[in-house]
Length: 448
Image (cartoon, rainbow, N blue to C red; front, side, top):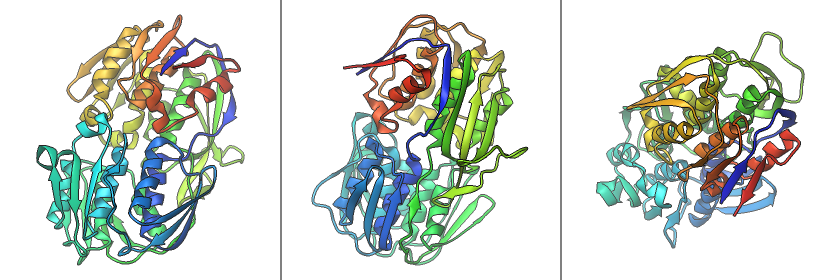
């Protein structure tokens, strides 16, 4: 599938983006592990999260779809999951497979997991190592580092105090999920704060969990079902918001966006670049002098975010910011290409092991559009402002690269053709329709 993108001079409107991908995955998994019935609203019905729904069904939890984005999960409790009859296919979802490993480390049966070509290339050792220390047996390709992999857990994994070499919510979450069944408390200490959606939702489901500084500790115990309302995904929101910042005449509001502080690094960077940002309570008026929303969903803060056309300046992106915006770097690179001065992205080697090598992809594909992007081992140097031009580019099967290139195409001279874009369905199925709605014209066409 291809996207054909034509430039626009105006974007305007108030929209909602799909539910948060990270929170949706966790809601399905915790709903299955809880005692009682969990009702979820706003669940992301994209390929990645539907893989998690299919996985919990394969493990014995009953799932009912009540309507668009609405699911009811009859939890089986921590000890109620059953050995699946078939291999669980996680598609393109790294979050699904890694969180499932955490759940399965506390289940005394074999489960085998696989994924698509991209997911089978992604490393799993960072998850497998701490789970093996808790007693799980993990076998498969590359000495347990590449899918397909099999895991046999324990009814009662060993307690663990783990010092993670990387700030990774997936590593932390896997250990905490395994710790629900452990023979004593488990803790994870990170070098920097990663997103805390698992901690927030575990508390909502009644888990005993404590965070002090960079260490999170969970005491094993049962979970109780709780209703979940999933806020809009801030990573998906970044695409229309940054489009609004760079298009000549634009003002766009994304309503009901999740504003967990561990995820709002992109907003901080945009503010440093000079972007005009307004944040209001969900459905309410602007909060003067505050970024704090007044509504919460799934225990998470949320609000309405508005961005208007802005003059941009280069900035530095690195250090503790990276875990708070790692998924938004592709579209932030587009903003950087159009900003006055230099933007340096550092400490982002993690982007080389995502759905694609995103650092190499951004340097190559934005370079084809006229951006001045230099690749570094752990980041990028981008000199702006560039005069972008339409070109034939490719996503490499990476949804965030595909959408970032589409945003660049909105301000490029001439037509941009993006190849290999069916991957967008993994996180943002109506992305093209949304951009067309904001533009008031068919600026993005989907071609088979």
